[in-house]
Image (cartoon, rainbow, N blue to C red; front, side, top):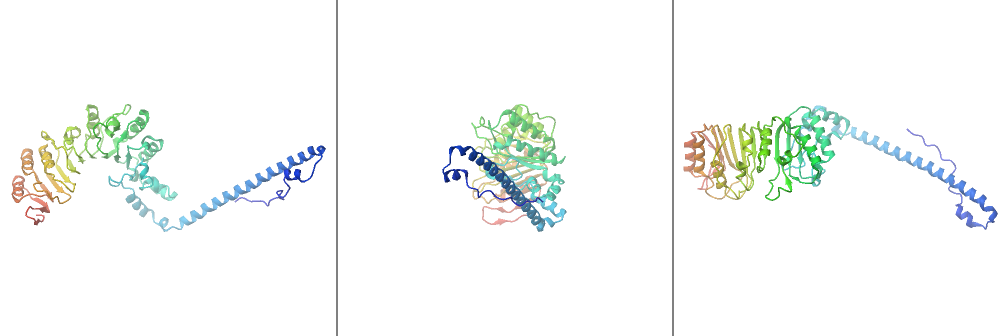
Length: 428
């Protein structure tokens, strides 16, 4: 604690030199003496100001220290801080999961400005108190997932690079779950800056377990202004060596891949076994961009139709030898999925398929939604030994259903199917 001595006699009551000079007439011969006295008084005033300023500074410092002491005492009285460490670890784990794709702020290392202040991250939790920090730093799995927004200037900032290195260091050697939002606006940063950041990111790819590319597709004509993750991986100076253990990949509409980007994708995705793709308006891009050619180990394929495609161009059947499970989800609320489903079944030959799931997330009104002939042709062409077929809220006639059962020779799980007659057939 500091000590404040009592103030010496104050000189503030002394008459101001200017007022003194104006009070009475002064002979010219006395002016040098008066000037000397005034200068001496000025020195005293300066010393007094310095002394009082020092006292004020000590008072402010003392108040700040006392307030910090009060805050510390109040914090220690908080019931939360009396929770056992084991329970805090459970809470931290639940709070630090990477959220759904729609939650852009979730564990985002460079969250866009409009999302600032939202989301819970290990960095936030570690800043509460020393005890929490010690617990967080001893939980590497909290640091093993993160997301990045490519469409913000913060992407290549020193702060984001520092956060990335912190997550990679503190997650130790655990597998990583990475999510990418948005697309990069070209010329936001220099080539050197983007190369430095992408090199640091791709250096961690040998630990990636899953990659979720939640970026919108780039419209025609915008490719000179906007770059996808695949474009950034092709940046000069970024080296993608070896093979990678990524098992799970999720992405929106597939990007176009030239020979160089296809080569990079084959390196990254050669061990991917699970793919979920959500094509937008151009359904043919599922095949024509080459992304499926980069995944020779693919076993589980999910395709989600989020809207009615405006292009359902017919294509030649693409054979994938290892796919065992195919799930097709129709998530739009209005429209007829018939043409899109027909193209999907025309587009694949899957000889190892053992599980097929088709479901509408909403009850769609249009009739003739079920591409019966295309589905039958697909099953016959694939020659697969189907063990499970699940249909959820799919409109079809009883004749079409009987044909499916005949071709598959398996038990069909119908959850619930709306028949044209209007009654609901429960699961069988």
